[in-house]
Amino acid sequence: MQVNIRQIGSAVLLIVFCSVFAMAQEFRGSITGRVTDPNGAVVPGATVTIKNAATNEEATATTNDEGSYGFPVLLPGTYKLLISKEGFKVEAREQVTIRVADKLTIDVQLQTGSVAETVTVVSTQVLETGSVTTGTVIERRQIAASPEGKWPASHRPRRSRLLRSLMRPTFG
Image 1 (cartoon, rainbow, N blue to C red):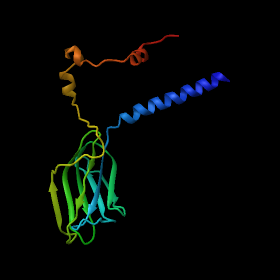
Image 2 (cartoon, one colour):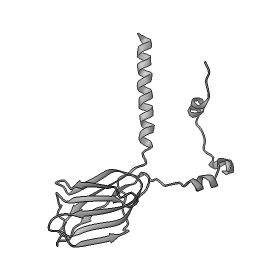
Image 3 (tube, one colour):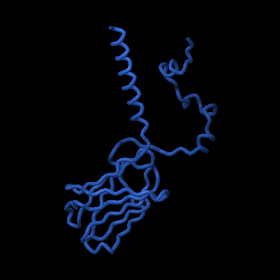
């Protein structure tokens, strides 16, 4: 009976251990924000559309009662954000760049007017308030230009004792 409990305990520990590493490997980014009117009041029911400039894929969200919207899973790339609501001009944000693991907040203030009118904002600074981590894209040529053998000893990656033991082949 104890063998089964140990096996179950080991399996649960392995699942927890693997899931922690899997969560740390998230590379997709997200965009959230709030839509308000010229007076600062929230705008529920606004349509928010995001379009990937490279693939032309689109996703649409509707602001909730607090005027908030969100796109939780976005691949790194450049996007265009469109916000529209009857009685307001269409707001467009172009050149919105999502990098690896970015969590951007883009708040938008709609201007009163006709939906036929569009206000376009190109390449604004976006504040990342969703997390304190940052990511970067490392290109293949950068990796090829700096092999581990050329790194100074103080900058070489160190492998932990646990990692070395896991990498050691076992026979039998």
